[in-house]
Length: 122
Image (cartoon, rainbow, N blue to C red; front, side):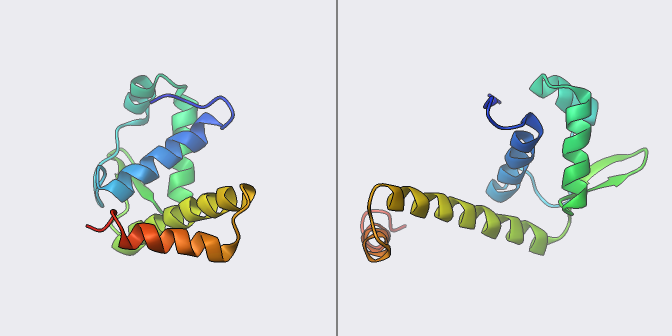
């Protein structure tokens, strides 16, 4: 994982874990790597990983079983909520970018419709 110097590392790791949940790389109930293992894998400070796990636990994304490990939530609703929030963030960034280059709402919707109905159909 490459880090952006403009964003705190712990935020980037949290976002990566959320992205792994959304894409299915991590599944509900999966055991997370130990803080020590994740620290070594990402080449980051152990305290940073501890903060990541603490923040994820506060958000209800992981839970810890003392002496056993940290696990991904088993709540499918929580994972669905994370996916929806991520989609909203992507859409907000897209809309902001489009407005920044001069498109109005009607033009943005028109471009979205063209692309949804066009080559991007599955």
